Length: 202
Picture (cartoon, rainbow, N blue to C red):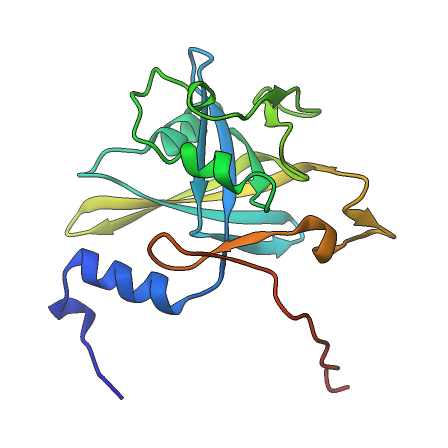
């Protein structure tokens, strides 16, 4: 076994080890809106479930040289976001939204995504996603190193689900119909492979 001390590695080296070993990672395609009404769309794989009561998701967003990313800035300002699950039908368009754009340019201008009105919040959702989670900001946790904030953990409370009819079956999500896509390392993604069941011990 190789032993590596994170303190001896660069930020980039630690990043590569993390994204290469913690796989597969679900991907959130997040839409937010600036105070000026500009819709921002960005994919994040540092994302997961925190709690089902209350219904909380986590989104971790690394800062760049101490500056907030557009998604984090918008969330802190408006307290709202729509989280979409990446799937095989929208992965190409989601990848386009990872382009570095000025804060005043919407990713709608470089992708094929189209928006739809949300039920519970002002931020619009994306028509091209089978699962849309309408959320409000529950808590903001800044991550610091040497007194400088390097990342932001945003805990988001789900206030509404929008689920495609073919994906929602008997009160559950059908994973085969959802066709979720997960993130690996580098430019690599993965689809749902073999599904198998193991009974929990009683």
